Amino acid sequence: MKIYAYGIRDDEKPSLKEWETAHPEVEVAFTQELLTPETAKNAAGADGVVVYQQLPYTRETLQALADQGIHQMSLRNVGIDNIDLKAAKELGFKISNVAAYSPNAIAEHAAIQLARILRRSKELDAKVAKRDLRWAPTIGREVRMQTVGVVGTGRIGRVLIQILQGFGAKIVAYDIFKNPDIDKQGLYVDSLNELYAKSDVISLHVPSVKENIHMINKDSIAKMKDGVVLVNVARGDLVDTDAVVAALDSGKVSGMVMDVYENEIGIFNEDWEGKKFPDARLDDLIDRPNVLVTPHTAFYTTKAVLEMVHQSFDAAVAIANGQETRNLVKF
Image (cartoon, rainbow, N blue to C red; front, side, top):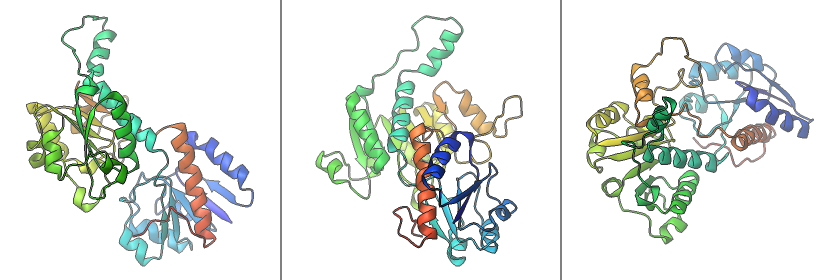
């Protein structure tokens, strides 16, 4: 059996080597190049490919794989919104993802960045760098004094709730699929509108599906408390960025944590130092003292990377062998 992997980063190579050593019966080949219609030919002779979500997987790309006799794609990430699923279905693809590589990594990132926003650490760091060691006016807020609205109580949302409860924060939660433990604690509210009205902080942990696109918009922001803090470590297109920029300008939104951005493909995970930055709106957000931008790195821990590599290769082998895998995506 042969598995071909695309977009393997240097930080993934130790985990890949560990997996190879444990599976000597599988031939592994890989490249740092991403999967495109042109690079699909590199996988000729493989039983499946392992990929990462950095480019759209269009009909053309999927057809190029199918032309090589490959009808299996194993993602090292959760999201499948970059895949032309209609084409994948028509071409007979089986697709797997890594649904739970490390919920803690993402939940911890959300909590850490939220605490930084509340304590105005970006502003304070800038002052200290200039040797301005005065306290005022960078007075902060305590996490325990906040009501945090958690939208989505899957694996990541539940871990974030536990972390924030450790701080002493009050939690309100909303999900169309209620978790029994969260429900037992009495944390759920009946509607998003109720969550918006009650929350000092709103943190998003839902998938990028049609119903959720731009769920944070001009109308939903109007229903929130003045000075609300927004946290998005889920998917960029959950947020209407222009609406949030306007709310930051007016003060309706007092701070924003964003690990994702709706136009991030081709911008994140690239070095723009000394080059013309390609997105003026994102450039402005990065410069704001009350906005914390990270380039889709909430997941980026040693544990998460290991799980993403190991689980994706495990799934690729299982699918090639006609075996069941919990990571198979239904679409």
